[in-house]
Every structure is written in C-alpha cells, then in structure tokens.
Length: 117
Image 1 (cartoon, rainbow, N blue to C red):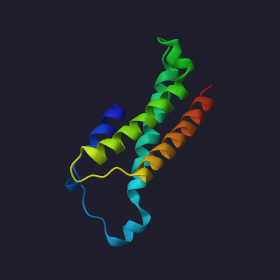
Image 2: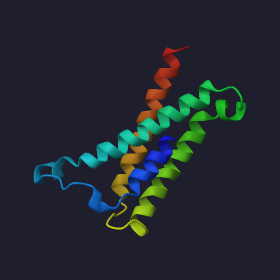
Image 3: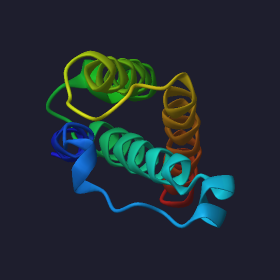
Image 4: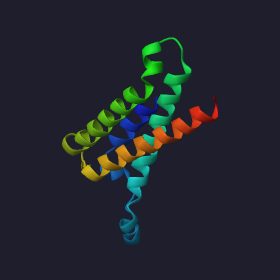
C-alpha cells in the first residue's frame, strides 16, 4: 500500500506543489521527503515479510527482496517523472535520497526486529 502512495505522490504534476521560499532552496526539503517516504516503505515491507509465516521465502529473504523492490521503485518513479509526468523532472539526487531512505528504513527495521526478539 505504501508503494502505491509513493507512486501516486511522484505522479502528481509539478503545478500541484507550492513554490518554496528562496532560503528553503538551500535546504532542499524534497530530499528529506524522498528519504522519509522510502524509509517508511522499506521498514513496513521488511516488518511485514518477517512477521508473516505463510511464505517462508519472503520471510527469509525480506531484506534482499525489499531493497531490490525499493531501489527499482525509486528508479522507476524518477524515470517516470523525467519522461512521462508533466512539469516534473527526474533527478539522480532524488534517486540517491530514495536509496539513502531505503537504507535508513533497513536500519530501523533491523533495530525493530532486534528489539522484539
């Protein structure tokens, strides 16, 4: 479900987002948004894969599968923004922020699973 939220947010046309004040350009808050969205995605999906017991393959390979899907989702959304979404532009820096968010989500999931054992 969270992946669907990511796809929907990244497919909104650029006009939908308000213009930021000039000083905010230096902080680039959109990078934080990218990282947080993908961090939540990885955390939720790893937690779901680990807690379920119906599909042992997903349970035992939760990290690899989730990171692979997360990175492909990040790449796909940036390419879609570059080539298909009006008034949006794909950015390698946004992709990097997505990947960093995936890794931070992995760290949070690892701590969560470790604490709950």
